[in-house]
Amino acid sequence: VTKRGFEVMYMCEPIDEYCVQQLKEYEGKKLISATKEGLAMEEDEDEKKAFEEAKAKSEGLCKLMKEVLDDKVEKVTVSNRLADSPCCLVTGEYGWSANMERIMKAQALRDSTQSAYMSSK
Image (cartoon, rainbow, N blue to C red; front, side, top):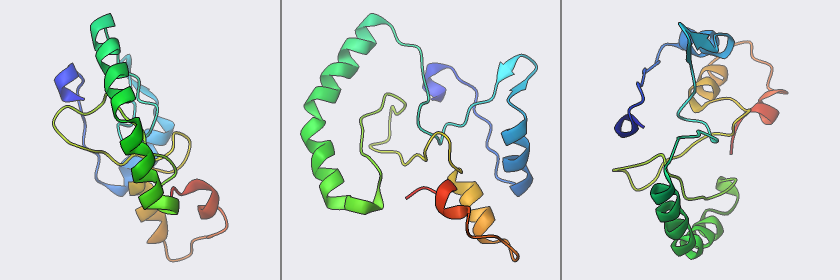
């Protein structure tokens, strides 16, 4: 993400999760979670073509990984968000982030009925 020129803010305090859920934009800049699926990055035609070729080559590997991991993951896909790392775990676009799941599990008086809908696999 940083190699594409995006600024990254690390938010590791529990209050950050609550604030960012409500604060969608700051000083004209849109705040987007890099840990959720659906992160769209601009690409030129050459990058799109190379990505589609890599995606086609990796289709068998993705199917195999999904079979091995079975119900531990929702899906396995190829992404263009990584440059140096071999893989990345992301959460669903509309569910809790992994950090928010950790915060909610640590709550003493939590209501676990909603956690099944909001948590990822």
